[in-house]
Image (cartoon, rainbow, N blue to C red; front, side):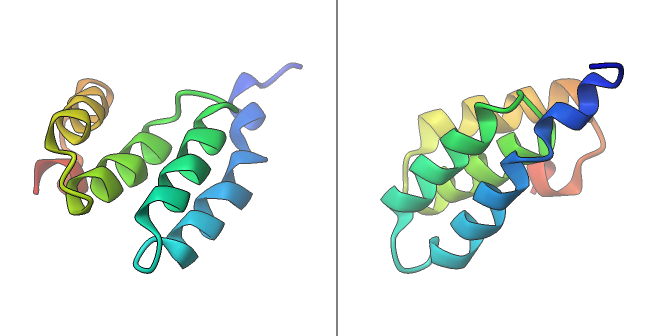
Length: 81
């Protein structure tokens, strides 16, 4: 309760699981990234989901996620590329 940034830690389980399945099942990966974001609107989670959406050819939602990343981390190489 003292450090709100620690609240996102359980979301890493879903991030790593989504990374594992994303090439074979983009839709499942999207659900897992959404689940991770349920633990907090953490920029790294948004970056991962945005990249997955891009490769799933959901460009509008990918642009939205990556724009949010750049608002908090304007030098994010992953979001810029």
